[in-house]
Length: 390
Image (cartoon, rainbow, N blue to C red; front, side):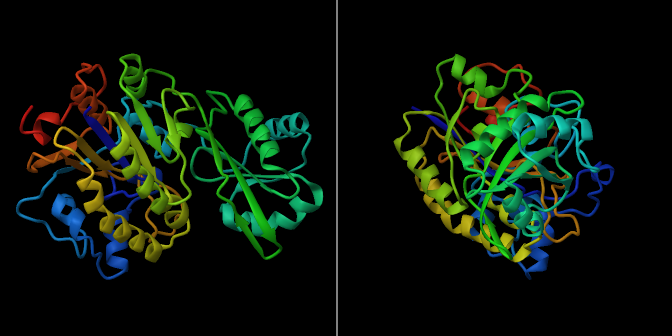
């Protein structure tokens, strides 16, 4: 009946890693810089859990007796993508960064993709998704084509107005792209459907985004849990990141919807792993350099934390973390190579420092030990540190 909850605050990094300069991310500090930009954050509940004990954050002071164990995780994988971050949390370290395309995708691929889908292609450039649909939206509607673009991340994104390219057709084209974009040279992390609606000057992306991920190339904790009869459920885009393998999730349109669904899943679950992602920090605020929205989103999650903790029983564990940074105060609008916070809570235990961990995979090791499945993943469990009864 016991449950492990892993909650990913997507993009909420906590300071540059030592190799951040190699990724062009020197000075990135998503939590610290956001707090400074708004004159301090008010997050008393996460403060009680020890968030301010991890790293200097304006408005969130350290506490003497945090109710959760606290630390930060280093990413062992190459890159700073959501897929590699989530894979590493589940025990799969990526030794080679997934390819990016700063000059657009090769013309041979673009021509083949256009011919296979039967659509004219527009764009093929690095761009902001909200900007490119305003710029190319009218032409896309007139030609019934597809807007294709990428970013500093390993993604191939396809945008189309729902009135001229039905969403199911857009998904079909994404599936074709996923089949064509194969490792090693073209194996992007995700193909992403980006449907939009509206009119010239006011195009708006809809909630019917869909991600098509490259399959994990090895066993993950999710696979092992399922093989051993342990239930695995999710909230948000988690299943997309694992190519829908060994997990089914309830997708959400916002952090607030995710909060409601996560507590409902905890209350109705008969046990197992619940793996959740709150993506507004990344998709709505980080990629748009909206540090005010980012800060308000953090404070909204903090107000919800008491309800989350109240839903847990004595045998349950809760791990709150992130998959990468996305500092909304820097010139970049893309992910940043940062440490991520680690808050590990169990209702019947007190908190202690977990230090700086060497890999996100420590989460996989901890959850595997919690369900008595052995280890075999990179890293080291922190279950004994967070649970006084182990």
